Length: 105
Image (cartoon, rainbow, N blue to C red; front, top):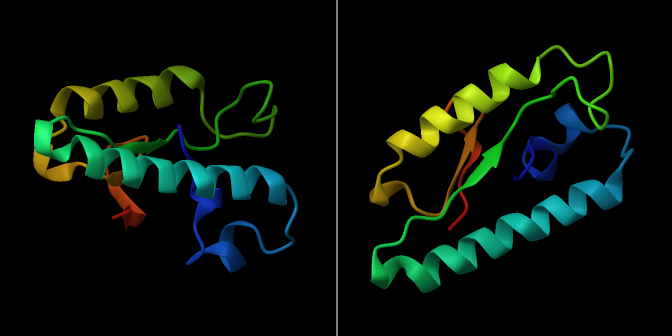
């Protein structure tokens, strides 16, 4: 489970204040691990991808988050059901759309 907060390209949009920098850095490391794992497993035709759940109303996301968990989970499960091997190593949001982090490798 990754996060758009790992995006170097959108750091000034999604995290301009720098709050939660350790969280952002850990998610960036997870994206690298996703890329490495996808490369290792590619010859075996095993698909690996990162998923951004969105800002979800949970204990971590807080009560101001705009999305109910069920919406995020439904979208992520739909992507899991429709993922194609050619998409291995990519980053998708909770609606199954490639995000600006789309190509991790």
